[in-house]
Amino acid sequence: MNRIPIQTPIMQHTSAIIKGLIGEADALKKLNHKSLKGQLRELLATRLLAKLLTIQFGIGSGVIINQLGMQSPQTDIIIYDRRILPPFIEEQRIGLYPAECVLATIEVKSQVTKAIIGKYAKSAQVSHDQLYDPLCSHYRDYDKIRPFCCLFGFNDNDICKGLGENEKIYDWMMKNAKPLFGVCVLNKFSWLNVMRTQGALTLARDDNEETKAFMAPLLDNIRTHSQKNYSLFIGHNDWFSIYTRNQNWTASKF
Image (cartoon, rainbow, N blue to C red; front, side, top):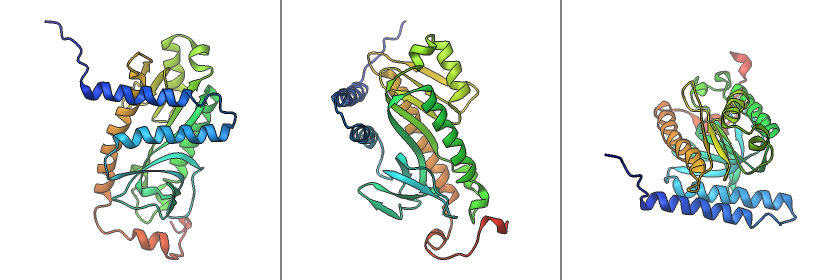
């Protein structure tokens, strides 16, 4: 007996939300102010995520900081766990976020190109290597709590057009997009560096499966990652003393 695909109300509603996001983003195309257009599209992506995250997760924008005061580049979307630490400085969702509480970062771009993917892949690697170096913490678990770094775009300039075939797109992403967790371009494709040897590439469909194939695994992994991080820090730790008091220590002490 053949199984008939079912479109449940939740599936249909999720598709409707994504289609609404695409429509709102398209309505901004003729806006002449690029900076404002970018900010509005960040807010649209944030609103989509907020609908799908449970209450223990917060969403902001700004900079990640570790215990030594090392800082990330400014990041469009930061998803963090409220249970571990709050952002110490935050106004209107713009702030400074302790490295321990950050679960995922998302850069939002109106146009996604191969050059942009390569740039943010390198930036993610630097953040992993420097911000989350165990030597930068009183507690040696930083290498286990690195956030998922992602890229989310509204248009694709040269990836699908330049590479053409699905297999070529997949091969290029596997070679050039790591260590990003995922890349999604609305109405084009999504790629995930899933936790196994092979990644996953999903091309656009009428039900916006390419966006669901990015969002759903990211949110599932954020929930799992938050539980692992929380279990690491469930005992007593001097987080507020470390961040707010003069500890007089540096990585060189190790």
